[in-house]
Length: 144
Image: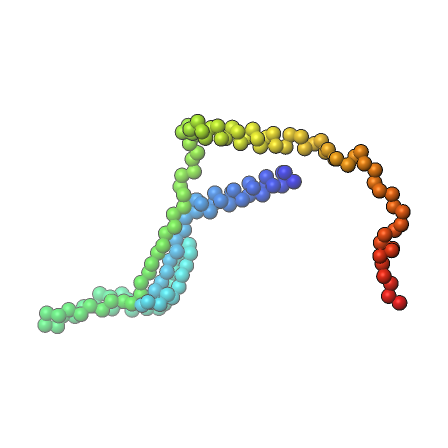
């Protein structure tokens, strides 16, 4: 049982390290104010307005000093979630109180399981009760 719990703990800790160091990107494609597509680890697909965006975005007309600029309605947003990139334990900067805590924790953990091999039972000196009648037969009811 002890080895099994150690294996489970090791697997859980490896998942914690994996998920804390993984970085990923979430890409969103909006057409106007409407969310069209969301993608993780890849680029979000467009809504088909991207082909018109290149011609209409840069088109500007000047009419007697006024300029009209047409812009595309599509926008892309990208959210980057950075993982932890430092996984170094600095042992040389441990204070005395931390050393004392670690030493006392290890000492109590090791001595916790010291005397578990001696199974002491408190009922060894007592005899079991004598069975005079079969009690389950007395309490049974039979349907006829």
